[in-house]
Length: 61
Image (tube, rainbow, N blue to C red):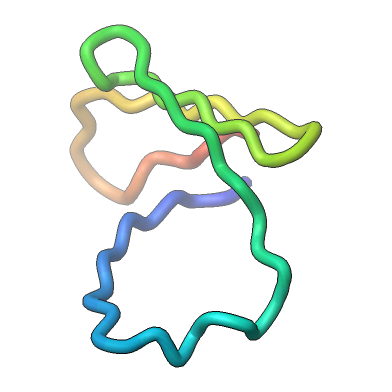
């Protein structure tokens, strides 16, 4: 089962442009940010979050 890991990176130049066609993501939130819906082309993914202790929660595509 996939595990979602959120990471942020600072992009300091446009050098990355032109290395592929890319994909458009559409993202929305339900229930005060506890559920995330992402659409990538014809596929959609639902991520459900909650209070959790221990290892990271799995993402359910």
